[in-house]
Amino acid sequence: MKIDRSNYEAWFLDESEGKLSREEQETLRNFLLLNPDLEEEFNSLLRIKILPDPVKFEHKNDLKKVLPPEGTMINRFNFNLFAIAWIENDLLPEQRLAFEKLIREDAFFFSELEAMKKTVLLPEKVLFKGKAGLKKKPAVSRRIIPLITGLSAAAAVVLALILFTGNGKQEQTLPVAVLNKEVPVVNEKAENHENREEVRVNPLTIKSRQKEQPPDHNAPLKVVGTNAPAVTTDGDTLIGFNRNAIQIASADLPTGTLPEIRPVFDKIRPVYIPQITSYERNAPIQLVARKEFERLKMTLDNTEDLSLWDLASAGIRGINKVAGTDMTLMASRNKDGDVAGISFTSKAFSVSAPLGRGNE
Amino acid sequence: MTIEEYNQAVDLFSDNLFRFILKNIQDEAAAEDIVQDAFEKLWIRLDEVDGSKARSYLFTTAYHTMIDQIRKMQRTTRLEKQHYSSLSHEEQYSDLKEVLTHALKLLPDDQRSVLMLRDYEGYSYREIGDITGLNESQVKVYIYRARTFLKNFITDPEKVI
Picture 1 (cartoon, rainbow over the protein chains, first blue to last red):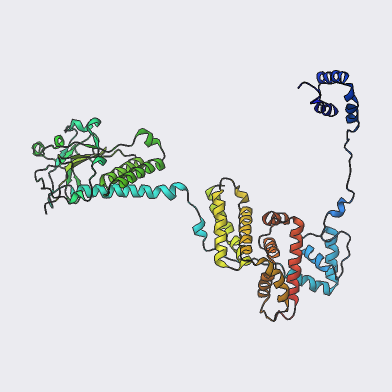
Picture 2 (cartoon, each protein chain N blue to C red):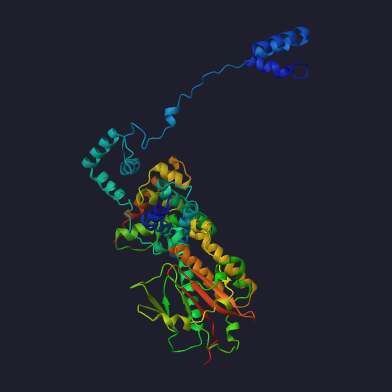
């Protein structure tokens, strides 16, 4: 900052406080030579510099409180003060000794102290009933486990619904196929994701299931073996399927059994239910669960009926995430746009079946 | 502060906190609300409150909530007068505990709170000052006044059988 008549006061002040550098002091001196009328003002500012003067408050100790004040004699008028200080352990050692001596020697003060001792409140046992309600559980336990349970339950229920209602043949054990590693996957298109479509486009709803549709008695059940069958004994594993259960047994069936099962994959256009992505597999379960619920919420917002497929999708994805399984559920639609068949695939086995409407 | 420390604080301090509030305001439902409110505030500030300070935080929070509530009920000014007038009442008590319980109710709010924090919870003058917002001298004065009042009350022969 260049010194001039508009700012010289700041320079004077800095000089009086010793803040100017040697160069600035030289600049200030030159300025004063050029402006001699300001020299007196400059000198007066230097003279009025205030030096710190150590002032002490001499009665500091008097302000400090000792209960009771040191050197006070105990008498009837200040006894309560001493008695309370004794209870509160506030007495100086010599005061305590003097006080206790007095108590021992004077019956009146002894009884007064006994009365004062009774003012000490003894803690009562009071129980707070709402203690359990105050406790918190870790967030994962509080929020996620019910979601996981819900998802799993949804998947189980929906799968059961689909499987149990998916065949028109009642009380009859459906055709059984040999689960064999050499049984080819019939539908190559099933592996082609481009041909898959979102089931949400036309969800299977409770309402739609009430439609009349002639049952297809010739609809076959196809059981396709995979590279990792759940149960193997002597190379062949049977999977039987009826309305009540999936039966797994072991038997030797003649090879001729296979042609009796007519593949239907050529009629089924698989419906794509997205798998757990590698990102989701590493993501927290909270994120996956939240996404699934958002997806369900969208479905509920957009349709009047609850889509079983969406529930099943969410459930299966939840199970995949939690259990590390790799299950998929796909469905095909007929020319009317209704879901006509399903295909369930896991590492252990695959099942495809038409969806009958029941002929009873 | 961790969730475990929070839950431990519930186990360790909720009873005492409830007793402190209940003895002050004599209203079980209101005392429960204040305790729950204090723990809820602690839960909200879980990351900010050190586990070792939880007790102090709870008592401070609950104390101020209680004072606010008492002020709302417009009880504060009334009790100071009430306790002097009550000295002449004719009630009789069967034991010291009853006398003290009654006498405690007659204390002004500040004195009662300070005395209970001292006797029930064993807080130091400074800690009581931190909780109540009083300085240490005020705390000492309130304790002195409270004990003097209690002593006078219980030594009156007309009040104890």
